[in-house]
Image 1: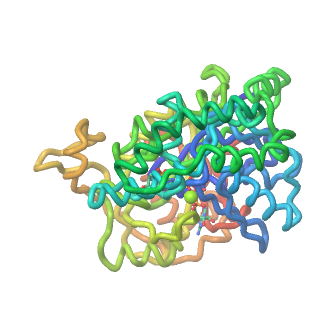
Image 2: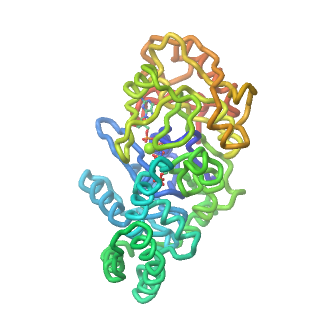
Length: 427
Ligand code: GDP
Ligand code: IMO
Ligand code: MG
């Protein structure tokens, strides 16, 4: 069996966690390949609700092996806090495997993330303040600390010393902050070494051997296409590769082994943090979506910015990721509207753009061109097949599918695992 990727098609929080959990029982491995605890995935199983940040959503499925891949940045305090939290609720986390090549987030990068945002003022990104950007910057600068470094104290010390030569200057001279000492950082990391060791493995070998045996590997993205460092609305992005290409580099699974890319897309759009968002609503309609959709961040609790479905963004995500199937989530949130607007193209200074403008400046000026589809009033949370949906909801799904560049294989009609309407079987 192949490798399958699950990708966010908008600006995050599309419901990737629920989709991963849904497929969990049909796959052998679930791999987180990018990001860190900037992610927040809510999974609802029966009466239980789980908020996952660093652990792959497959951790909740008995028999499935969760893997933190080489492309992830790990806050070790958060990792063990999350493991302890799940264990206390009776979830077995012993199957977890962590890549020896994943980077860790040293304490100074959390500080640098927060002070940089303050320093930027009105040009801030609106980061989650978890140290994600500075840690990926260190990786590219080749001054990062990796999981494997924790098992060789003298190497760890050398690396921390090297990094702090630069970081101390930045903290003290640019930001007027106290720099941490080498011992403080080394000790803060080493305290986790013994507990971490049993989880650590060569995950590239492990995953490729699993594929050789015919097992199925699901690659679960954090963040999303429009937050991808290359393909997103730069600089208002995260610092990792959240698209299908990132699934390969962040896991060590070659592109030819991946034959399905599932794009998760909300039936409307949300965004957290700063940056352009053409269909954003500033009126009661936006407040309505936020309220009905419970659009508050899983990680930071910030209210999410809300807007209508943007098919230009969906087509772009379909293209960049090679989406084979979309899962359209939260259709139930649109129930009860007279009409549902869908953005089909942009107007940029009087010129129609059917595809993403090349220049970011144009994207900042893009005004949505809407088509208005008739709404529905029926409760759809019990729908399990496409035929169960009321006619106008069916028409909305069909219209969105036609505009978005790939078939819609499942529709979310509620937060719970089973509140899903399957159109084409996914695995
Ligand atoms: P992720 O980061 O992509 O995993 O998404 P989040 O978990 O941050 O945000 C999605 C939210 O929507 C979560 O609270 C889910 O429980 C919820 N959710 C997912 N799918 C559906 C759906 O089809 N309907 C409703 N009402 N809620 C959903
Ligand atoms: P999931 O996986 C939504 C946003 C932040 C900020 C930008 C950069 O739950 O979909 P960072 O801390 O990553 O440097 O912040 O990216 N962001 C997310 N927005 N969902 C997420 O994850 C996000 N992870 C980061 O709000 O705008
Ligand atoms: Mg989220």
